[in-house]
Length: 138
Image (tube, rainbow, N blue to C red):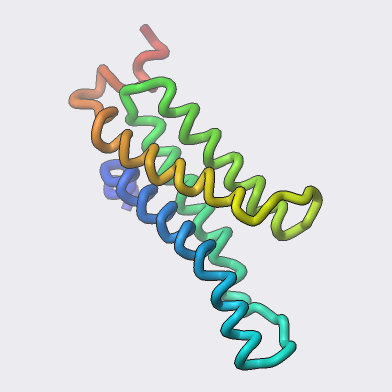
């Protein structure tokens, strides 16, 4: 499992970020449909609420492995920054500390999709010596 995750971390990251984005896009429509069906019942299924955290955990590990194997130092910071902002927005949605517009979640989610895509296409190590983790020791 770990070997698969290491070798396919950008693909898994793109998939998780894309699914997160779809989840965010579909949620308002599900609430509208639920309102039509249940009329005034506002409870959201538990499994739907927990998906946010599932995507965060999956994307955490995808970014962890992508950052370890990227050939570009800036990519590591870009991936972690987007993940941090995504997690802040998701956690803030649950606890309502700050008023952040709903569309703000799309910015880091879309950014993660494109960063993983870019990293997969242009920043892969051909050998262990080029990876960002080995660049520190130079």
